[in-house]
Length: 65
Image (tube, rainbow, N blue to C red; front, side):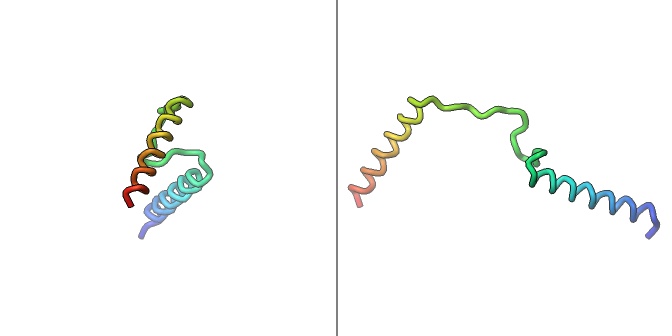
């Protein structure tokens, strides 16, 4: 194996390790993560509506059991 191939392999390893460290520290986005899109925020009324619906479902399931 010539020295150029060794250097290329070491640089690839370095880049993978550097990327892994950045991901663990939260400095970079990995593959498959949303890039640039912001999360939608749910209103308090929307959260309450979903909460009430889930409580109703759980009560019905508990009653049926």
